[in-house]
Amino acid sequence: MNPIEWLSNLQWDRLLPELIGKALGFLAGFAASWFLVFRRRLNAIAKAQSGDSDDFIFQMHRLWELPEQAGDCMLLFRNIAPKTTLHDLYDNIAVREYLKATADATSLDNPILNTEGTLGFEVLNDAMGHIAGLVSTTPFKRETWLFVMTCEDRQVVRKKCIRCFLVRPDDLQRFGDWDFCLNHVQVEKPWHWFRIVALHRIALVWKAERKMAEEEALSSRDRDMPLVDKQVRHDRIRQISIGLNDGERPIGDPYKIDWQSHVEKLAQTGFVLNSD
Image (cartoon, rainbow, N blue to C red; front, side, top):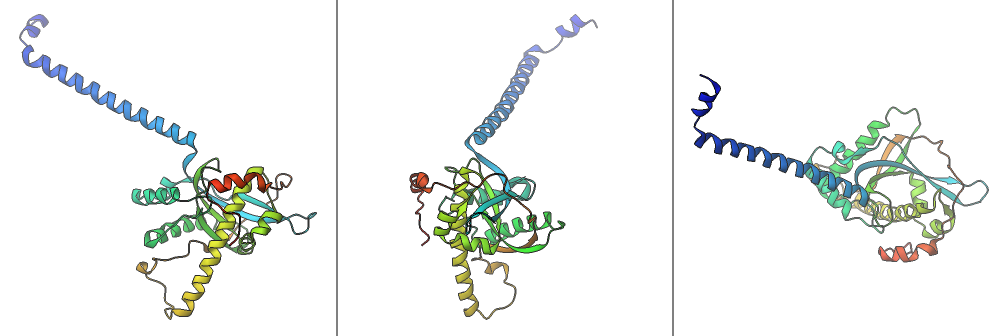
């Protein structure tokens, strides 16, 4: 049978609609896939331009005593681990959504993630375990550091993401004195003023948590390890023993902050310049 006869014997009344239907289905699927990919790309670009990020950063903070200015210090903070992402650290989508919602609820006046309940306790523990494992083989002497999960206000930071702060207890206690922050703490860059505000607010929360822990210790007779369902209330600022580089030095001249220039911006975010 030659090709012409073969074509003439085909049931075109059935074949043609089927071919057209499959072609239209393929084109519709291709268009939908392209639209979803393009939309995802646009959303990613918009997210990057807005400053929102899924990055998860671990930063060490310390006060560097200025040798030529008695009583004055310089705030240094450095990343201590490779940058990771929320997706890499938490594989459970429900946990990631919980963390995003908790991070969005923070502000300059209240930068600490409100990790409530058992889920919050486990989220905090996972982050602490992650950084403890990353720096477990460093040659530096182990010390007690305070660990806290934060997300600073997008109105004052370049990138909004979850930052886990590590700070020595003695340094954080000094940040609790707002007069000390105003008059004796200098920074490496002019825009680092917001980190002083965040550390001050964290110091006040830490003070309140220590007081509550002391009261609970006096009233509780239970000395066993708490069960999972007893972690409804937990400290959001936790102690961790790790070894970090103690040789960090300033990378520039100290900058004294002009706090009066930030009063209006602080007022807009609801922050009151006092330590009460």
